[in-house]
Image (cartoon, rainbow, N blue to C red; front, side, top):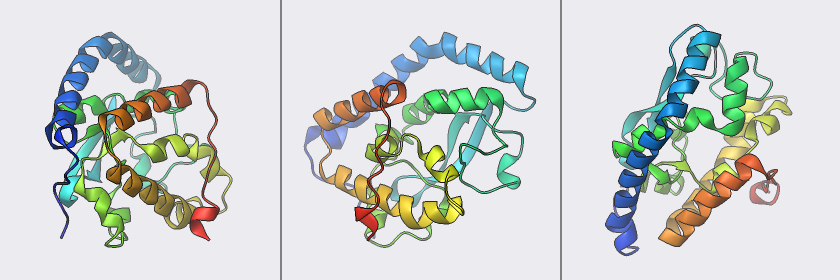
Length: 221
């Protein structure tokens, strides 16, 4: 049975949700002009809806619809693998820019506001991958999923890494995903306000300045 609560003090039991709610609310208001501009560009440069919603698995195994700016062609998920490599022809020209700068993730502040996600927490996966989790790996489902997490920083340019593989989907499931889960299980044990703020800062830094260093060889021997 999945745990639904872990004792880490006031921040984890209530303070984290308070920070998430007010940060998401303020962020949506502050970013509204930029979000509207991106939405307009998306509508002008590519036919189809502005937003893309996909079923993901959240806390306690409940599914929800994650919201992103659409970066791929209409019905791309029906005409290719569930993961995306940087060379994927389904990505639109504007979508490549949004994915590089993580602009497509901004609408997830709405998921945070609704209480489906947190600013920091294990990135939610699609049901197909969650079905293969071991009992130990299911610990990531004891907390709210997040917009960013340690694995988001470690695999900042994951799509480029996948593009170099002969079988990207298999590589993701057998190599990358287990390592991501191990990073996030470690995160769950060390959650704190200081740690979350440091991950948010590192995420912003990694988007604009750093190159990733994939630490998967030793994790999968």
